[in-house]
Length: 354
Image (tube, rainbow, N blue to C red; front, side, top):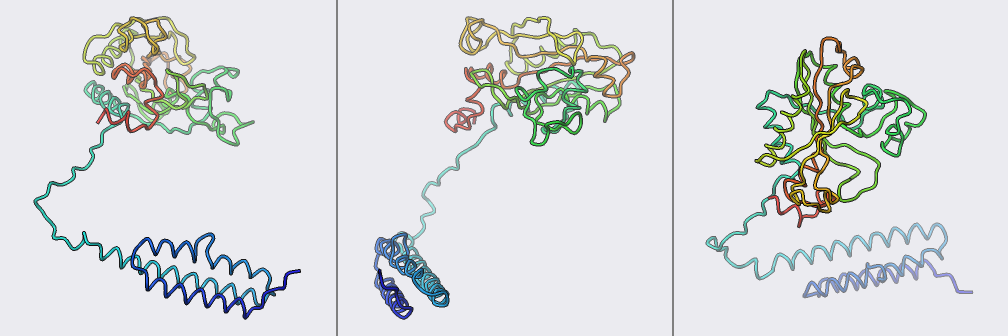
């Protein structure tokens, strides 16, 4: 059985390490020597660690004394190494050279707006010219605003976790008490109706979240851009004017579109608008899945139940929704064939838009 070390022996060994290390720090003439000394004395395999391992063989009173001594030695040696290192750095030959103010400087790297944000600002400016206000709703919302107020049936699959990210603790709750990440922007329209007096027109851009698989056209977190116009007499053809405004602003030229009948719980009647793929010019590519068209805008007339949830009389007021998949417009504007690139934070990709 190994003999237990004596307290005096451990303290003597610690004193030797301390004095030798302090002397070695004073003798060091390069940063490389200091680095080697740091590893040999206070590193993970250094002499101080070996002393620390000996503490376990001492009695309780001795462990306290030796442990404090090891900590003091570690602090003294570390501070000495830092001071000596600062002396070397302060005496670098390059620091003694005169400053030549005629040398060309190093230009700072310029940044730029993310392409999605740039498009959002462009659209905000376009609709501000049409007297539209800009509204922002909360990203954490409730079942009340995202589904109940939007006329979604109680058994609609979008309410389940396969589409919506519900927050922890939402299970078993309903309505305003069931919180989650907003799966669409449309719920914000009722918030606006409840806070303002009609008639009104506004846009509300922002990020939304859906629990779905990602591919070249789908992401779990993406941007939408919605518009709503409420007045006493709003023909559905107004939506065509809004769509033309969006596309003319984004692309600077007329874009072929087609309108199809669509069903959404919050509109009646509803429609879907497809635009000709700007990546392939309608010839068919990965982005449009070979069909030459890309679905970008659902919309329609607000359902009477939605107007009632917003505190409006559907017999007096009507309007037009248009919802834009903002990321898909970015893909069309810049010829991007994979939406995942937009959200990748890859500086090589983003540097193209500075």
